[in-house]
Length: 160
Image (cartoon, rainbow, N blue to C red; front, side):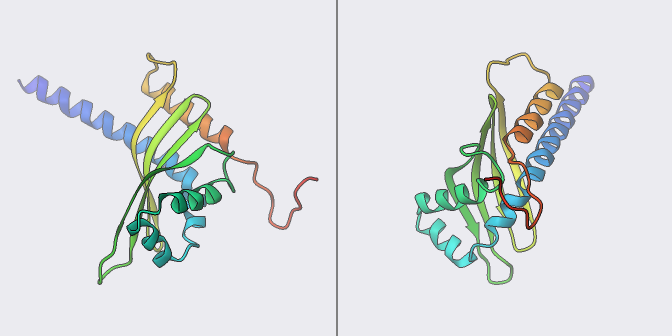
């Protein structure tokens, strides 16, 4: 019985470590998008969420995401929420999807006044049922890198 409990604890630790690695990977990729979304008036965003204006939220997410990722790689997953309390700053939660190069990631982006975080729900690699955790994480990193648009230097003119 003790062995089984120890084994379950080890499996949970691996799962937590895997989740943490994926959250770090996706979180690092979402910094620019979260910063861009934070430029939106929070009261307007909260009104869109409370008014269930999914199309408007999707447009906002798409326009923010397409500044940093190839078109269609990052999408709003049609679910959002917000925590609005009198004694704290609001926190907005947006369910998001990343799809690129046969990799799909489903996660929740949480945006506050000064910080943003992600909660990874699942990561799928199409056509690869027998990949180990390390290989899946590597595929996720490569897909995110491939989906990112090249960064221009500030003040640089786009190519004609």
